Amino acid sequence: MNLGKIKLSQLRALVEIATTQNFSEAALELNLSQSTISHSIATLESELGVILVSRGRHGATLTPLGETICTKAQQMLNQLDDIGQLASQARGVDGGQVRVVAFRSMASNVLPSMIAKLHTTYPNIQVTIVEMHELRDLQQALMEGKADIAVAELLPAADFDRLLLFQDPCIGLLPPDCPITTADLGWEHLHTYPLITSVHGSCTLQLNRALKQAVPPIDATYRVSTDTTIVGMVTQGLGIGLLHQLSAYPIPKDVRVVQLPFQLFRDLGVSWPKDALLSPAVYAFLDVVKTLQAETYLATG
Image (cartoon, rainbow, N blue to C red; front, side):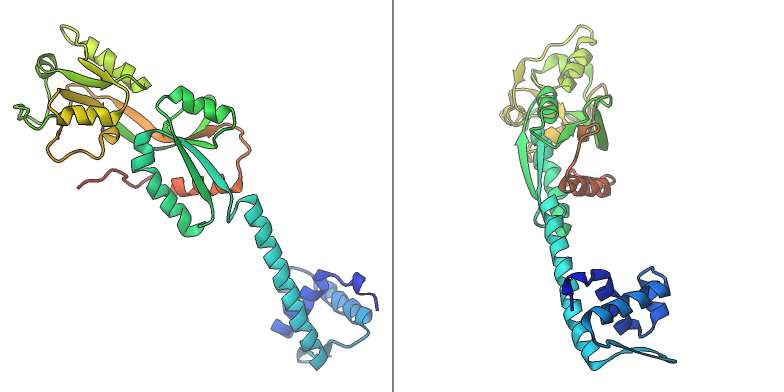
């Protein structure tokens, strides 16, 4: 008896015959020919030197010894499945890491729902998040392999694959004691009140261009580094904040959101380098993003 010659395919055939009690049906379930199944069982019996299957006109049944050996064979196949699961975890399907670089607003308002959805299926995937202000910094982190994906304003399509989540409008924030009662600001309001804007981002350039088109051109009174600072200054009555809606969240109760006399949007979503060798964990994350594309992330309360 040479146990080294026994093949897993022979054990699978034995287990399937125990289930179907028929060579033809076992062959169908394993996507093999009946002759292949018959040869596998005959070879297995020859190697072990015992009869495992009783063949008859009404099908095939296992001998008492065959049933005992079948139980052992099933345990071996279960162990093989466990090995496969461990290998999958090592590749990142059920484990692994996703390295994300993101705008602060996306990290606060969008990524939590993505991660929660991801962990319903893949609880062992770890997600690390590094917040950045400038698109060029996110782009550099991806190109240098320091991050897997960016969750922010979409990066250039020439170099990156992208998934659009939504368009984020530029809005105005009015201080608590501001006498403006309309829901839509006019150019006269922007000329009259101090304006607070950000110094970061390509959208800031678009906002500055729009203000320069006013007659006469308008300059912001304050330019600050963070969105939360803009909201804080508005809350203290220092002026009207001009920023993108997602960046303003959470909006204080006494601060009012108004529309601007022009429309500006930025495309927000997920970007990653073209032809990048993504891990299974990253692919799992991207699958979650696709399922959430149609959902609204902004709080409405």
